[in-house]
Amino acid sequence: MSIQKKAMELGIEIGKSQEFKAARRAEESLGTEDDLRGHMGEMQALQDQAMGIRSRGNQVPEEMVKKMEGLQMKIEANTKYQQFIATQTNLQKVMESVNKTIGEGMEKGLDKKIITL
Image (cartoon, rainbow, N blue to C red; front, side, top):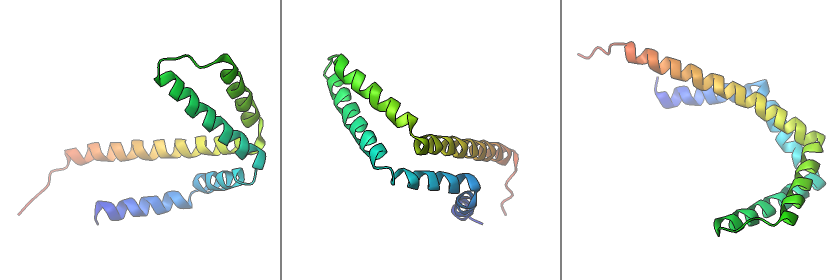
């Protein structure tokens, strides 16, 4: 069986996992929160502006920093956002475990002798 085929099978199994499904549902539920989407969009715009300011060697104005902190507090207080973060954390743990297991398998593969005729 090819590596690509096994990778596809692994992807399918991950897609069936409760962690992946929960993360997908949480991500979709963020789209129903107009206030949250607005805050996140505004935060992204401010972060982009701040990065531009810093890249020019300037300091981000305190007023902008305070506005970003306020938006961050509003975003983090949202229940659906909290659920999203929790499900992403759980999925990340699964993926770390999968990657660790793949790495262990790769190390074992180094020990196997390939017989060619």
